Amino acid sequence: MGSADNLLFGLTLATTLGTGLMAGLFFTFSVTVMAALSRLPVAEGVRAMQSINLVIVNPLFLTVFFGTAAGCAALSVAAVWRWHWPDSIYPLAGGLLYLAGNLAVTVLRSVPMNNRLAAVDGNDVETAWVWRHYLSRWTAWNHVRTVTGLLATMFLSLGLR
Image (cartoon, rainbow, N blue to C red; front, side, top):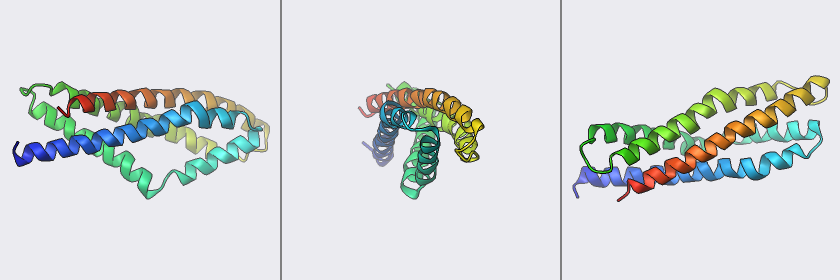
């Protein structure tokens, strides 16, 4: 194995671990956090989620989330570049699944919903409607992130051979 192959293997391993971490985080939200928040009174659920949305934007999360996206982009380009190599489909599929199902869904769906939720005060009639709507839509899109993250991890793992 040459140094380029070693570098590619290391990048694939690190990116696979990143997709697994993110899939686990999204899974936890889908099956526990959102269900727990939905059981709280509206104002409490809203305040708790608003706090989560502030706390999650931290250097460690951002490094794993965007670092994994950068790794997926690089692996996708490398897979196209090395298309004639056996198993090039695996890093391409894994990379594209994460980029579309995790990065794009987060930026285009989850963050706008989080911003809308941040704008409510939790004590008016509109808040109850916003919260019910938020819970169902946000959780549905989070299921997408969970499944695509898990599939990305699987495909990238297959590319480690």
